[in-house]
Image (cartoon, rainbow, N blue to C red; front, side):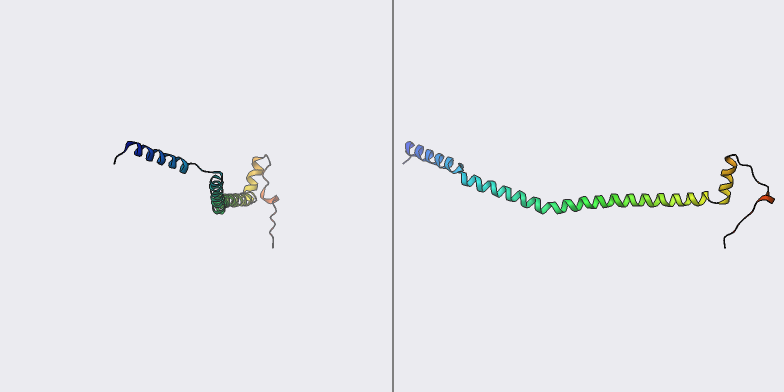
Length: 113
């Protein structure tokens, strides 16, 4: 019952079937390639909006940081301008730049109504 030639033929047939099964013809390769390409395109279409949204969030954060920095700079410049236009500061700058102090009787103060 255990014929070695029969077992060998069966083994050869199994090996040939496995080889034939492992071989892919052109149609199968084309279909496989198309399915992989379709999957990649679908993946790109699905993930692109999410990536774009994350990029926009980072860009918005950068713009908000720049806006905060500009507002801080504006506040600092306003304070500096107000300090520079105060009479005391103007007098200090004039004395520092070589102007002589006027006597009190020669000073005139003008108020805005």
